[in-house]
Length: 304
Image (cartoon, rainbow, N blue to C red; front, side, top):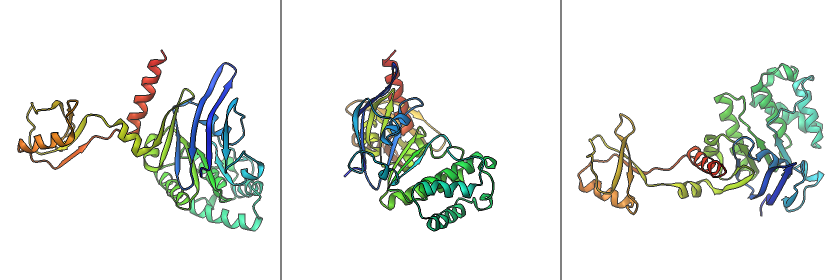
């Protein structure tokens, strides 16, 4: 059973259609990527799921029904905009936000202490929030998102202002939450982070869903007619079935563009028959960045 089910939601602001018949489902035990360029409708979709905005049409169910105040206590939300109280000490801010989720005071103090230690914020606990760096405030917001152990975690651009060490720590925490069966929605435009973390995704562009499925399925669907090979021999200029050869680096890596109808198996057999010693042979799989650019650019050109 899905934790979130979004069915054909639409949201207009005046004459601007921010979300146009978007649908997707998110399940327990997965990290789901909600992707798109800036202004695509990602954050509006999240706010509809959280019942901050009401859709003009369509339906959203969370935990197998409409959103309620009780269900909101089962959700942790990290917005892109920082929502911490700036003029109070960090630990008091976190304790207050935990109390809004109905947490017992003693339990919240113990969990906050553990998170402050893990996030290397222990020395900053008495400082006012406004005195903290952007990265420290981002970590503090993540603590407030997780401290009540939500079943559903929604995070909007979670790696903003984080250095590589803290970025990796956040990734590890998200993986831990997934292993516990939590449902995680990650809203971002950082494709490399999605490739490392997400199980499935939806790509929204100009308010519409243009890509939906598992990362492996999507890559498979966009795999083209290019093969990567590695050899320390010089490849002949004319290889049967190959239309273009590109030497990509000094390590003997080549990108071979093959004719339509030539399978990788046929090409491999041809290279072996030519007595070319291969160290590596694999179908070139596009990165999510490449897929993203291809889809968004193609769609934008079609609307000109």
